[in-house]
Image (cartoon, rainbow, N blue to C red):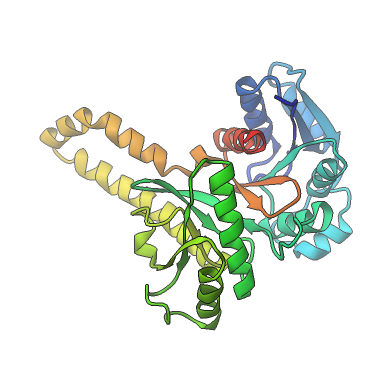
Length: 319
């Protein structure tokens, strides 16, 4: 297996570099043969590293600036050329790293990756794809937040790159592709959805038609296509609903002595279900359609989530 190097944006997480450094150290234990590069303010990163046992597979690449979530993506990429995000992407572009992980601004990461790393030939817009749990395993949802406004051709390409990823990286044979819509009938939806339906139908993909949001958790499709606006709402709603439902179930289970006994007996099952719906277990979502691998981690990630985002990047690259 070829040696891998992964660059990590140490400054992009909401809770600061300590979370990223901790996550990187945890990931290095799982994949000690993979070299990790923490990109950001060198003194800050080194200070965090001194709190932990030294790891020779982790190095530091200095970047003096930080792009914040409230900055305009295009302006930030253009003006902050020494930001951790830009420097990390350039490390991939120049061949110093095989992939890049960041919990920073989604818009800035998309813009920077598109400009610096570039799109694969024929791809108009890269898409952010994330696996969401279903009764049959998981469905790849894309786009889930990168492209808020999409042309029908974008949606068609999302289906193509999503199906390609599911087949080549995850071994799903002839993956079923569906277009998220307000109804299953072909004539449903807005103008973009109607045109995208026709394009997907003619694409040669295993396109099964429109799918309503309620059909996603049932695992009706392997790839669920939509624009980033709809996808992000679906993703965040599922995160919130699962958290609320688990809280309600816990409250009911501990309401009486008898229910507490039942909760004790079913503890393992509930733990497994909670794990399936915990975004921290997934860690990060890949931008599909780029020339090199870029993984977006949740901005509010803790060290456990960052560890898994880095691990996912390694596994994606090895697939």
